[in-house]
Image (tube, rainbow, N blue to C red; front, side, top):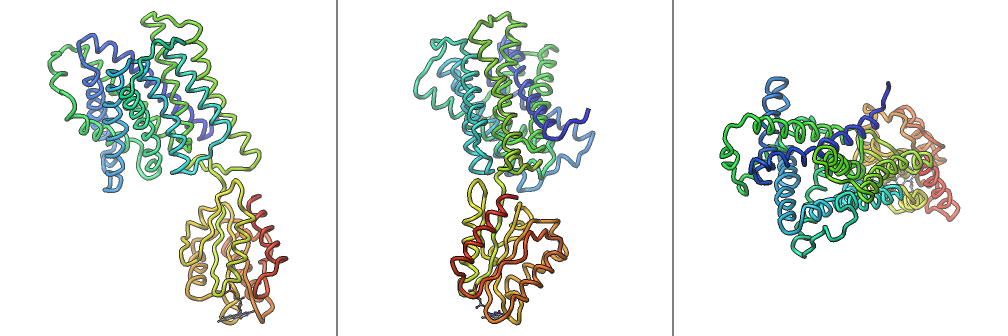
Length: 454
Ligand SMILES: Cc1cc2nc3c(=O)[nH]c(=O)nc-3n(C[C@H](O)[C@H](O)[C@H](O)COP(=O)(O)O)c2cc1C
């Protein structure tokens, strides 16, 4: 069966959520041995990083290496998504009840949606918002069974519980920023190491040793490290690297609640009842609704999909040089025409980077005729020349600029040059005599619209 990368990514994230759902089962068994939840949290991280260390040392020690920048990222990941998350979550359980803490934890998809909009420009689509509602109501019903009296609310408890949700939300947000640069195993390994180190001062590691050398407990610790740490985190981080949006990953992960309740039913014979089943169905439907998102929006060509980054608004770059403002007015009108469900970057060539062209879905570049039918020599000429070797790989592009006494020779040559560099020139460069008239500016807006329709 040929499954595309994105589907593989979704399945991995769903797999991660399901494995996390087993944590309750293993935790419950360990609580029988008089271990506190803090100790279980700490042993999970310890077992995770020791097992992963042994595995990576034998398989590929290179994966244990990480540079300074990566180390800072994983340290934050360990601090927020492991140490602070554990402290807040167990703090919320103490201050309220397990049901309340779990529900407050599932405010995390809301934070992920907001943060991924800010940091990764992920779209807030109607499908995502409906899915978020279904997921939150679903989690509420699954955890409480519809009984509001199962909740125990107080101000500090709510605050700490929401803090846990926020820290949990930072996991996909921070991970996403490094999944393309580092191997998933490396990220997961250091996430555990730092999580463990930051959690250590708040826990009592001796508590674990006090339970003695019962082989069953140590086997449980291995399961804890393997099944509820290494495997799910690796699946999750790899899934993210396959282009799953963080906001979707966080909703899909709520499958954890469904698995946890289902296990409680089969293993501990805990009642399911109408409201819990309704909650499970809502969580499952929230995951299904998310899938509608991609298909419909892509059909309408409102977005671009990038397997590395997920779903984004299309990017249009308008890059220009202008000495007396004529080409600048043209650039502004092109940018105006391109607006509307598009991320438009209007930038002077002095401040532009190669990525502004390479990462854009369509580009407009403007420069007046200077020298003798030439491009401006200080900034535009070297910027354009830098693409000679890189190549423009069929990048959709339109050129524009103002002139005075010539007949547009510079633009004809420029069009030709960009074609030779590999650009997909959508139409011949637009030229305006000196200060662009209304008619010229109208043509510029049309160019903007054309680029936006790519
Ligand atoms: C140094 C210099 C060289 C120019 N060379 C040409 C030229 O070869 N052909 C032409 O048609 N206009 C030429 N022009 C006129 C400019 O292209 C024209 O003034 C244009 O409107 C300037 O656009 P801007 O306001 O975006 O800088 C030149 C202007 C300057 C200052």
